[in-house]
Image (cartoon, rainbow, N blue to C red; front, side, top):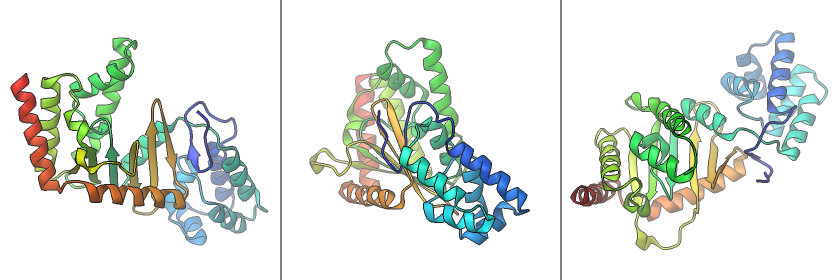
Length: 281
């Protein structure tokens, strides 16, 4: 799958990519005797954001790279590298970074057109999704993927953080993934999370017609770093952190959320469909 500017793609890793950028940034910063917090203050961002650059988990905007060059006296080194990496758009293991960002996000807003989002899936539902997507995968691989998905759900253990808001297409709750028993359990789990006020869920009804988004979208916000968008298609996913692109995704999400049922009406619909599955099982 070809990548485009502003995204992080799927296959393999570049020999010299954002990890190299981060390693060089750390080395040059330490040579100047600056902490991450001090460098961040000088280039008008947070110290933790500098730390994310150094870990290769985020890439700076060009203007930040230019300010880093000024503060570290690196004669345009980081700006040139930033331009080169953005232009080449090197491929990356997209979900390693997405998982990391989920863990530090203060808010996650998701739109799911096909499946219940992974953060809210039961083990049986996750297994059915994996088998449906990879019907020839061995059981050991399926179980490893399911375990990884459930491990991500540890962020739900905190009673209030991050803020979690999911907008689901109505087909998500009506498609019988894994059969009636699995779906009944899944919808009951979703409703329980809503009842505990741990998540907000809205359902976009079928009658809404054409939607502004055609695939999975996850918008992640942070206390001291710019937001990112994660978009996913068949067998692929991509992180977007260009501010203009993220703003467009946010606007599309806002329009979509405006077409959804209220949280209370959505919960009533989920409970009603769960009862239908219970009657079938």
